[in-house]
Length: 379
Image (cartoon, rainbow, N blue to C red; front, side):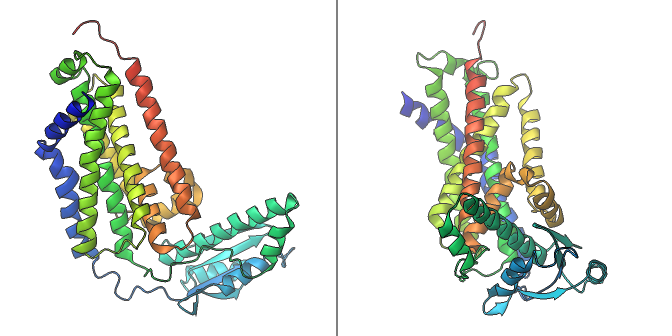
């Protein structure tokens, strides 16, 4: 019975030409527009040495010397990543306003603050290096407090970097950044398939739901079969979209395709469960209204992920309220693709997988709670 429901649900979904257009054809068309608009951005966009400054604490000037040593040691393609100056706070502000430096680090005790005048690739690199240094330094400190002398020896040796190493085969690509976000948006469009599942399997929302509620099988069988069918459709669509982007639009996704498929699978399932949750939670709302809500949510997540020229807002969120980025599915997916492509060490990527898995489990649990409470007086 399960595979019968799955098979017929698959046939029903494949006949929905409207959703096939918005979840498959539209991202491919939009990607073509991205190629036309952003295809020339990577010419001359090689990351050069970043002019930056360091402002020491007047009372404890030696506190940040280790951080400055790390900054001075970072190289990319044999070239120093930072051209550092030691300035006073006033001089650093003046040079930043005059656009003579990309930003400056202010060292106050054990704290490090980054000041930038605008958002861009150079500022993102500066923030990434600072965040990774602080994370590693906190890890080493906690281990030393526990008496782990081996960690102390590792920290004192210069063989263990305090920043995430770039993948030498990866080229800084602005076009890839936009396409990574477009992949996340394409996956979120799959919420429409989940919404249609709720519409067609709930007796108080459609005649199909009434018929499915009368079959002599547990309701969970219907839900899982429909979910698997929609997952098959959406996952196949995303793989086809990735194929077009990679082999026709020449977007570089790196070489870690096995992890890329994991991210796509988790994102696809999360999107379907989000659409299913909205459909189950608001049975009295019309289908058009729910589709409008999901479209608005998808566009908002894409905007906050930096897709629509909103890199400054994305940077501000990452710097001030990073939790917003961690619950933004488009941002999680695009950041994961970027980390797979650009970095050798994948600790941040693994953290994103945990966030995606947590969001998926949350949506699954909420759907289970909502569906188990659904009862009908009559059919």
